Image 1: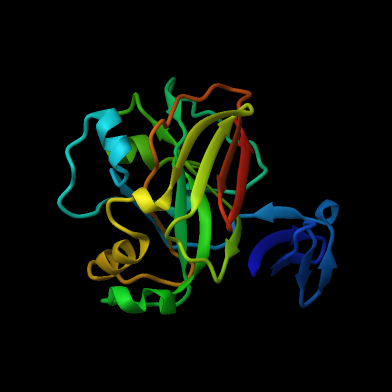
Image 2: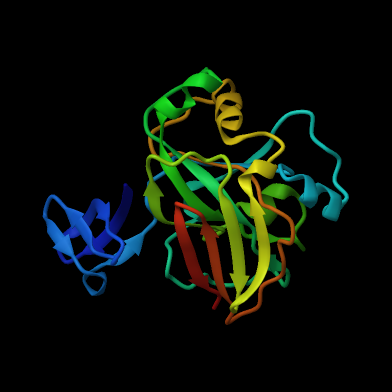
Length: 236
């Protein structure tokens, strides 16, 4: 099942997202022209893991981390799918990175890896936008609209072995599978839950495959994760 949050004439609603784009809610069904997609959850924080694909580490000449290397994006970084992303006024080097992300379903801490599926509502797609010319990871990654997220939360998905692709203006720039993560999704969620209490709607992303790259105004970004969906945004 895929779940979407939408803005309608009846307000903000959540419902099941069908293959034709219809969203079925308790208030009725809405065709694509009758709603605007919103981020599929409302996190208190977005916990993002970096340096988690071997090819990325080789490409960027990073050291292999001994444990998941994470940082936090604030709720204001959230940005909806299908909505243009503003190019930051303070940067001239904006990059994309297509990431699989878990959405937490219940408040939890100290979760064993074997029980992570019990606390994860489902999976979605994050574009971890990064201003490379800023000083320090927080300044680079934790700005407004730096976390386009969506389009849906896909439940009943095994996050291992999913194929992904990122296309910029129709050209494929990233291609990999989640099998190539150094630390798997369930292990990452368990690791983070030892350190922070995860709340319903919180997002945990698992890092980007190789070839994150620069964006220009007018670029169209499409990030697809198998069984989850395609996150689309343009840059303005």
